[in-house]
Image 1: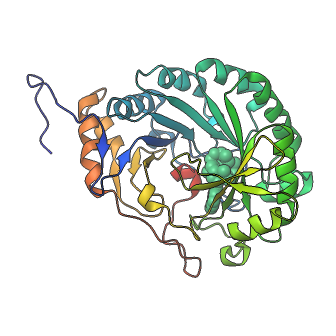
Image 2 (image 1 turned 30 degrees about the vertical axis):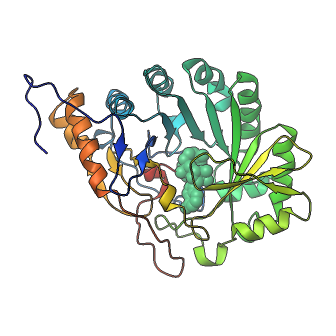
Image 3 (image 1 turned 120 degrees about the vertical axis):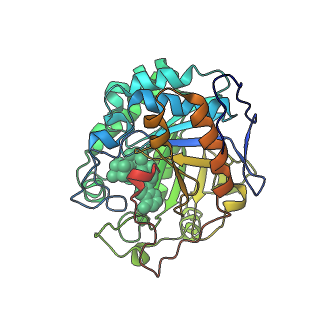
Length: 341
Ligand code: SAM
Ligand code: SF4
């Protein structure tokens, strides 16, 4: 795409629309590929992380966020890896939260740093937080996360509750024979604290070497059936524009969601793109179509118009959808921690 010279004012669309008439209004940005946990479904035990020079700087990340918001994006989620292990992440939150036009800055975390960071994040303008919690049992939690300390995470959740976020949500990846029998306990924990809870089916992203993903697969419909032995689930049409199907839990103030990339295709509703830690714009979680934003950023530092051109051009390669197959070797070799879950 030609780039206007400085003498020609650049003109940009107000919104990012792809070939299938989907409006991209939501961006998930991975601020680091590093993490203090090694969850069995997400990472291998031994991970090689990216050299720092390949990772976008906080200033570059802030510019990417601004470019998106100037093109009509209204929601940004910071994720990772573990976003809260990135130094000065609160500064980045402040920069993004104040962008005119952005409705929501949200964040996904494993909770390990929340005891220290919940209040500064709320003050910086983060509106909502999703916290991953796969088990309430210390030993199991340790086995699933390999390094995680459940007490620290639970203290982090309490700190987040005190910090005054609009809403807190829990995420739990459910694996057969690891935590599938705990789903009702997780709902009870969430209901007591008035936090919504989403159950996630494991996705085949990256080689993890821990377990056979097909054997560990525990479908959302099964989780729902298990929960219905303890709770009444009332279907709701409420949606966050994402792949979750929501149900109200009768007698509580919460909703449970089911994220099932295998069992329910949600691609036609897709309103999102992702930016990896290295500045790769990923047009689909389950495909490799991407654009190299880091190259644009490093060839033309601080040139937001160049960046916006690259974002607009990338809409032409957002694929129609994906098809995860558990009976095949992973076709997507990047880990969720690089992609930004
Ligand atoms: N470290 C943070 C956390 O764990 O919440 C943020 C990044 S993590 C990659 C984001 C979400 O992706 C978490 O809820 C995690 O459980 C989920 N996740 C990671 N690997 C996954 C996989 N292979 N399939 C499904 N969900 C996965
Ligand atoms: Fe880290 Fe989150 Fe991946 Fe677990 S799911 S290893 S906490 S990035």
